[in-house]
Length: 467
Ligand SMILES: *Cc1c(COP(=O)(O)O)cnc(C)c1O
Image (tube, rainbow, N blue to C red):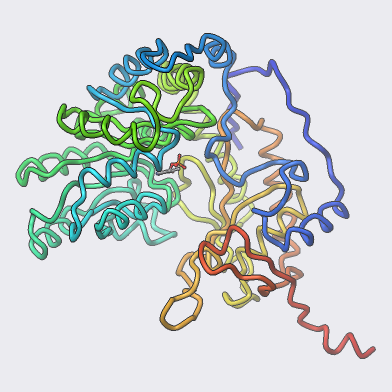
């Protein structure tokens, strides 16, 4: 198996506690079999999320020392502005504390009650802000995105026929913009192609509709284009990122992902009127338009992080190929998971991993808990628990995809950490029949996956109890 050498060396280390299986059995019971409720210090390798968990470089830490904390007109704001103009090509921007704050301001400004917002699959916070502004999200992603076994190389693409049908149905006036996400998170980190965004631009020009990019994972997406799309093998990541953005009218961005920082985000655009309106909103919800939701030092780290994400192609190659390496190890062992491998995470297929459990016994939740007990690796459930209950019938939704997400933080874990995680999961797969299902002991009404508590179902306990 070809591994990918890390394009950095380690200068500062954060020790991690080594735990025993007994420690971990105790910890997961205390956490009600919910990995969100584990203490971080009880986790060996934390693959819960790639959001805000990146390791910053020496240059980013040095930049933080040069934070200009002036209330107005911080030098770091102007440096960030110049960086966003150079790398993404947008004329104007307002800083925000993270991605959802940018989504809030954009949705309030662009959406009118009764509008429809087409997009390539929903994202949780994005859809919520669209709905809060009175809009309705409409999924126009290609059908392949919903099939975990489809090997289509650009499963993030928009199906322009679906978009045309929506326009014919509701009228173009009811569509404020297209919400276009790179490396679509909820589809498993699946990329869009240049051919798709170019076709979308031509289509939207015909109808005079804006394209607003969710720019959170554009650098990862650019790597897939370089690797897979005809004519792009010799183009740099920086050129491809700029080309993607050039077909759009602006973006929201969670800088906690490709931006290589622990907190931050922004809303960017080319139209001056939109910028003036966004500045008026940012002072209400975030802060003055030259810091928004960020301190001077945070803006300094972000400007440097954006530059590092595109300065050379080695970083992003390592980042995406490290994720792919984990996926390839699991493929080699015959472990069922979503393909092609996405940019930021590998998704285990818990239904196929644990065929002896009914979906009502929460196989993905049970598998995430058991991976922790076996290995000290923390993953996240994306299945029946996350999907919740139908408010009318009270039944669990039983989604088609019952997944466990192994999300790779950027520049944090080494080759041997990834091998350790893969070996542990492969070992667990060989004893998968022993994994027990779960039942609720506490079920929150909304977003239940964050705080729900469970216990194991003892299939044979009634008999055993009598012995
Ligand atoms: C994380 C994320 C967001 C929300 O950003 P926050 O910084 O968590 O508020 C929006 N869109 C996508 C695609 C994301 O991954």
